[in-house]
Image: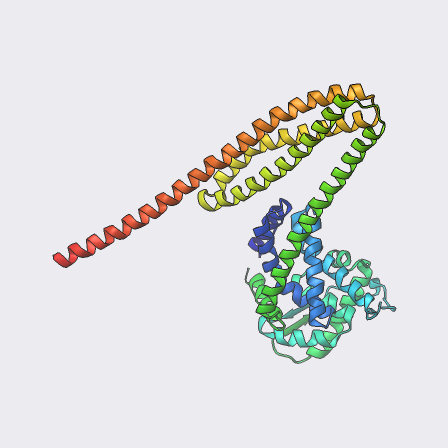
Length: 186
Length: 211
């Protein structure tokens, strides 16, 4: 994991020097995960590819401005989130969640642990959640971002992230009751 | 450690639930890289166009003042043409150098590439400094000062550019040629050593048969 992060940081530094093979490598490394994430926001597959292309073009243009290469994953997801949301807005499909509860009323130290063979189940459960909850849980599953990082990616307050995460975990807890390989701590 | 590994496995399995089609991915990636190249070329073209426009407007404004006699006219045209020639030459040679860097990196490794880059960098930096400096002085002369002063500066810049053109083009072209020869020599050496190896193997096999 640490080696991967280091390799990513080196690739980012090379990309900042406009090294084309490094950029290709970076795209190949991140494309599957990014595809999975964007697919959870945008349903149409062609639209997903459009979002991905716009994301990578933006990455190529702005990567020199990224000061800390270690923050590349959060920065990448933020760009793709913005591109996906603006596409949904253009198509009139984006619905902002109106009733965001403040997070302070939740205890958010519960963790969801899912055994590696239960990925299929997690994937199905993600499909049953609302967009905002699905997106936040996808970020949580894929990268294990902190609350602050997720707030930065989604451009919402940390309280909102906590609240959405709490709700999503609650939904998952209900759905996973009794499933093998799943453990939930409160 | 095992926790992070199982997490990695989980992410891999999760992503595998809805993976992009391999063909689609390749096609879209190729599209993406083409677009990136196109955009980079377009950006450069826009920068050159803006520069040329500013430069030519300044020059045009100077010529329209009609203070100029034939000598002034020809000196100014000469300076502008040579200036544009320098600009194009720097770009052309820079492009060639970058191609060469790619070939060098493939054949001699990244160390040789770095060495070549540092040799070439000095000449390029001097070219850019001269180019920016002469642009500034010329634009200023065309727009602000009287024609005689413009001619005086123009003649100085004309000589500087001519001298530099000769040095820059010969040194860069010489460097490229030298490296190209080295590259060819290396290719020849590789192919000779390969054929020698196969000959040796054939000889060994023949000896074995004789024994």
